[in-house]
Length: 220
Image 1 (tube, rainbow, N blue to C red):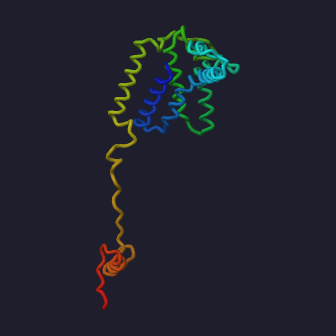
Image 2: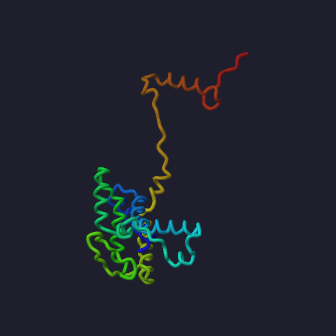
Image 3: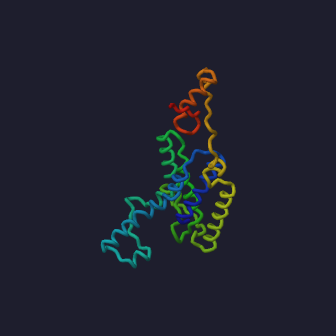
């Protein structure tokens, strides 16, 4: 599946988990990890290809034809980012270091599981057991027109339901516009003073403002 759909599915799942199960989960980081495998696989080749294009070391026609520079750093980046074994190792180590289960990394897992069934032998079939095995599944290519339309139709329905339930907003409009109750202080009760003494102090304080106090008689 392409990277935009991965991000949208991860955002919807993280939002639903936060609102329904009250899970401590940051949606932004979940989306980042859902897009990470493709960024790892195609980010370096695209960056190097653009650099070569700007410096005159590559042909624009070959770039538009999808002939990107091969960047592997000694390992196939696509297989690294799409391996369940690599994910489980990173997930375990990260959770141990953080002292908690890093749920945001489940966005990465969702990417792998979706790609297993949405890539075919013709184009980047997912080797999800790398480096132990090269086993792959000949799935439905995500770029198939009817499948692509069904993907975004399903996303539209999901986000409509999230909007209908109010889960796409931070808080309800009533809670957002409600003002806190006014602070009331009973000076007489707090200071244990007679009510007449409190009123005298208030009148004397506000007399010079012209708002509330009693006006003092003018002296001749």
